Image (tube, rainbow, N blue to C red; front, side):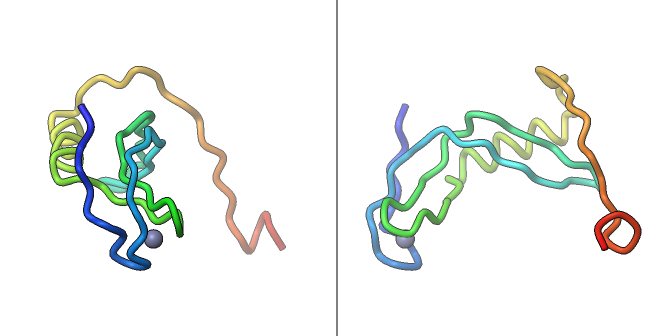
Length: 83
Ligand SMILES: [Zn+2]
């Protein structure tokens, strides 16, 4: 199923659907969704989330659905670890 996207909000370019990873934070935790159908501008690369995709992701977070896999994410403190 391919959604229809309106032209890019920023540059007016055509927006195509692609499967992309999407990271978001919810209740202080980082969540990674892979192969999310997102609208991507063919000119400037801006990404757009369709309303039904946003709703579906929201639902997964609220229901605390079991993820396919878990990853460990390295965390750095800028003051202590970077400089
Ligand atoms: Zn654009």
